[in-house]
Image 1 (cartoon, rainbow, N blue to C red):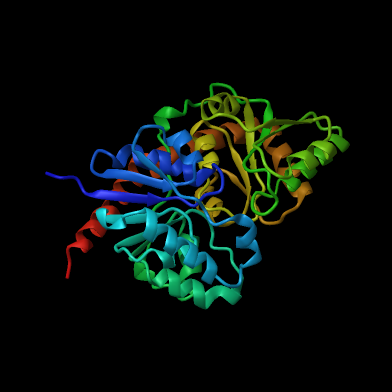
Image 2: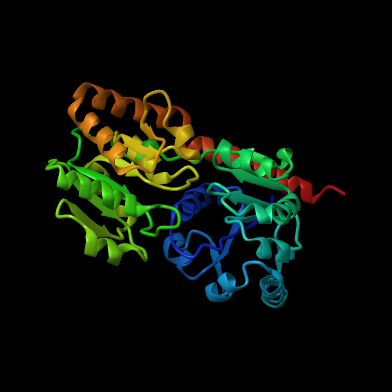
Length: 359
């Protein structure tokens, strides 16, 4: 029997949690589907030869910023590009990995699905446009319940939105026998979402108070140079790390500190918890759903002093620390395994392919 053909489109500018998700999901999908990935050149580097990859030249970032309030040129760009160079009729279903209104409007092939990896943070001025674009889709996978609530508030049909939490393979992440030594931050070193400056402030405050805590920042981005200039001696900058190096990073982490303004359901938190590394995070949507019942700590304010107080308190209370480590691992095993994610996602793809044959 011929396997259905699935096209997955990524418009990501760089590697992040959404791309880690893509790699995990592709490995499972390719046994049931003929999968093709359409995206930037760097996609090939981490997907490898698993499936066919095609290059998608993204709309130039400069013009994208300049023309934020009009999508006409961008939509025309993608319509011409798709019409001249790609044959979407050969696919039974299409899945876009990031919201891009102009790109979605340019794709006339159906069925079409979106995977929404982060909170939908956008000016209310765009609500009517966003709702119209998203309601044109057949399905929207949201990685957190809060993400779905935000869409529904903006006028998106709730029946189109499906919550499927991200997951990891617990067997791939060894539970740390001993706690690590470093309060660790992992992500893109960019102010817009991950808020690395708050982590810098936490380290600076700890140093000023004479705390023995040591800090690490893992990742690359446009704020790295400035943070390097301002960092205190207790903060080490490790830069970007290859996926195979992350096991060592988690082994050496005492706590994962997340300072984000907004999140989806971050893989670094899932992976850290699987390794028995407690997560202390700002109280934003994904972590709010993940760090429940004593499996982590949520901070309701973007305040360095509050973060440092919680980190220091947890470091002193070894009984609470060990209990949180164990509960975090069990939560991943029970509710956030990659097997759960894959099975639910496969069901959505199956429904999409079946819709193709309906009148």
